[in-house]
Amino acid sequence: MREVAWRLFAGEYNDATLELNGGGERAPSYIVTPLGAKVNRIFVVGVITDVENVGTDLQPMWRARVADPTGTFHLYAGQFQPEASAMLSKLKPPVFGAVVGKSRIYAPEAGTTYTSIRPERVKIVSEAVRDYWILEACRSLRRRIDAMAEAQKMDPLTKEGLVQIGVKEAIAEGIVQAANHYGKADLARYSAMLVEGLRYLLPEYREFRPPE
Image (cartoon, rainbow, N blue to C red):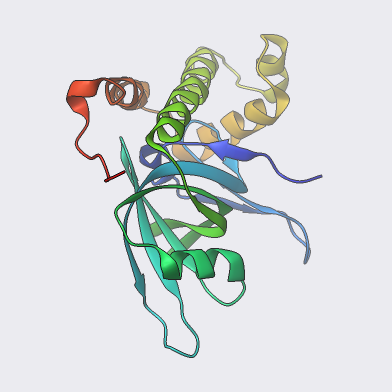
């Protein structure tokens, strides 16, 4: 079964430092965020602010940045992502773009991690699509904040206990793994991200409108 593509803000995604490998050649790997999102695939919509080839002319590797209200996603697409690479090579930023891809984490040294997305597809979209994505990402974030708030009241914290109070099993498992790795999540930080996302939908907070 194909993995669900999470709607996730950059602020939460870039906080992630936990990677879980499924074991085996075809088993999926996951990035677990501090709120327990267990991400193999991700769907983001934002402003593609810049695109550059950091490879060679013969073997291009396209790097792009996608901005949302809370931060920036980093994309890398090469020869194994032909559809996304072809699209990125043609883009003229800034534009509103939608990206579906695989989660990636890179740890060059102990204590330092960088998250990125390996895009499967990139598409130019409208501002309305971006706004709807922000709303969906806010709803998803709110559910995880609420679930983590309940989890922080539990002693001991168990997946079964979370499921009993109505948390979906996949999210409950991620919450337990996140709590074991990160400790107590800073819910005020993520509540602020939620407010920022909703505020961004107000006309007076728009900083960018690409030409029609």
